[in-house]
Length: 287
Image (cartoon, rainbow, N blue to C red; front, side, top):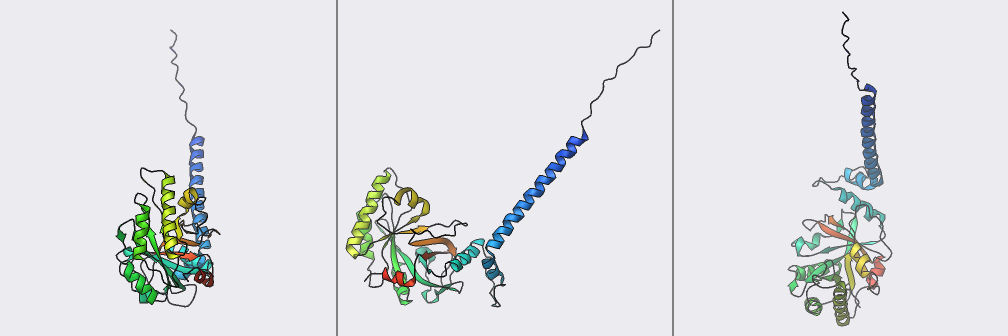
């Protein structure tokens, strides 16, 4: 009797080599990712070494008082102010800074003198800043160049907005030009209508004070909507990008941060650089 031969199925085993290969690749990827992150942090640290040294007390023997946790933006602020040490530093304020102790407003970080201030006066057709009168008077007493700005509301009558500003602000000899702050987009109207309204505001204010206003806006708004149609005006540009380190030639002022700390003012403060010398800034004032 023949023995029945039972065929055994051959079980194919997966190669351990492939698993090992995948594991090694994964480890290498993690190593590369970690190394890239460390390199990035090292690059940032090296680039901002002056600011970091200042805050950690290595730059000088001066003992720096402990403050609330310093943000990386403070390091950038110090770096930029050092880089543009030949420019003029100023701030801008409104009722959102509360009651400012102007006799304490001197410098930023005890190193960079504050030489000018823009103060919000009005917004829209019916809003007067609750701190304007006080800020306007006290900044002058603090021997600081001052200027007033209007926050423009696109969906309100432009002439009424200009009238409110003129009624609220009295410019004296030595004051900076009026500022038109435009940051918002209109509702239910084209941009051409907005531009026409801006032009009416600027013309009315110019005719009243005899000094040409300056336009404040952010960089994107400027490039997309205002640069070409308002090339006959000078601009104050806001750009807080952490990696933005260059003031463009066509920016009269650069608002480079909204998060500075200044003695005499509670909370964050906007800081600006004037693209010129102190003498040039004085030439801009009302005669």
